[in-house]
Image: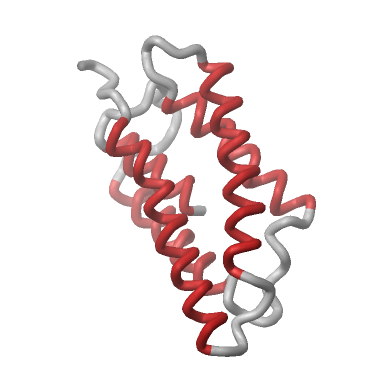
Amino acid sequence: MSAAAALTWAASRGRLREDWIPASAEARGAATLAALGEMAGDKMPFAPDRRIPPSFLVRMAIGAAGGAAMAGREASRRDGAIAGLVGAIAGTLIGRAARGATTRTPTDWARALTEDTLAASVALAPVRGAERRHA
């Protein structure tokens, strides 16, 4: 959900190639709350693994859609979608490896919070660097 939240923020700042991603304050708020909720939920012992097919497929779809929407004027939508898809796969697998399987110890919590911080930073980096649509 970090990527979905970042996309709504990018849309609100006119930094997307496409206009089908919601840009309203309500959309940004809902997506941001969903991202924060997912970060909190990931630490619960009953949270499903992000690598299970439904979760992984949703992450890949959001990554591909986001990559296509954020592709610069000189890039093809297809190349943007591929880059977003690769980023989603890498983020899912690397993030899970970095986080670890549990949050039972203070070290586990530190790893999980560090992974959350990195995920949010990585999601926002392309938003800051994206071209303005009407620049």
